[in-house]
Amino acid sequence: ELRLQRSKGYAPISLGVDNEGSAFSVDLQTLPNLLIGGTPGSGKSMLLHSIIMSLIEGNAKLYLVDPKMVEFNHYNGMKAVMGIENSVEGVYSIIKSVSEIMEHRFRKLSSEGFRDVLSYNAVSRTPMRPVVIVIDEWADIILQDKSIQKPLCVVAQKGRAAGISVILATQRPSSEVIPG
Image (cartoon, rainbow, N blue to C red; front, side):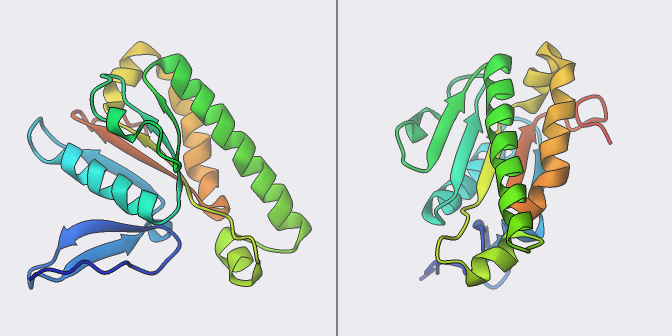
């Protein structure tokens, strides 16, 4: 009988079971940005849902992007879900909101003498929750507007210290879709 145990960590995510049938999870803070690539039917959606459910249980703030409007609808109205967007304009809105959270956190960490969220949370009575942007079908977004790559890359590069992560899923993990 498989019993999943709640993992400890800042943003634990369940990835399934290992070769021995034991629950396997990882803290998203150790790999703050993820790319999930694969053909249709390869399990991308199942992995995304597993990650999202783990993050909801772990008290993260989630921003979801679903250009096809079919994958994330059932998360609508959940307390952990700050928004579900379906358009390029919606992605820009999410990036702007998360950038503002990131800059606010950097100011707070700096003013209180901390280098990152983990050290701050270790002593704070009001810990900072993980913030995660999950984008399904990233290639579809890029085909509509390539300029969206730059602001998302800034969040992905600077966000780790602020407890912010980006998870992208795509059928086409090529250099045209995911720049360096």
